[in-house]
Length: 123
Image (cartoon, rainbow, N blue to C red; front, side, top):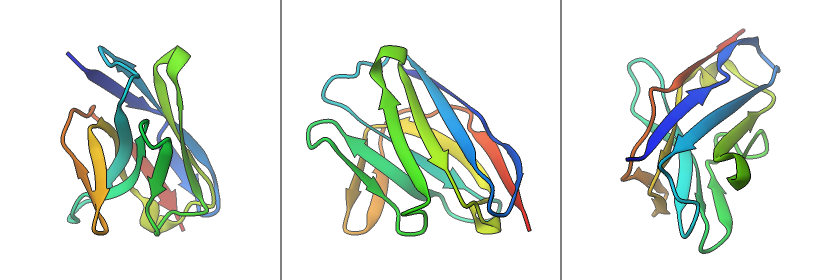
């Protein structure tokens, strides 16, 4: 059974940085896709990134492009999201999830995700 545990969230001022981690267990880093999405109170889920190992390509949402970088450390079974130049609109719970895809401008997540980690950016 695939299990993800996100961590690294917190309270940061506008312009600050955070690095989120996602520890994976029961997950095989072979021919996989994995990414991040976020959800703010009262708003719909928003895809942030999706990495596909077959294409070796990470798709990053326009809203965070140039500020957020997703990466994986297969040896540590951990996925990261480096977030720089944070803005109040980045405030949300962030989740990592597998089986993602990006199609016609929309992210889809078909697999599992963890409990999320809260990111709050103060103005």
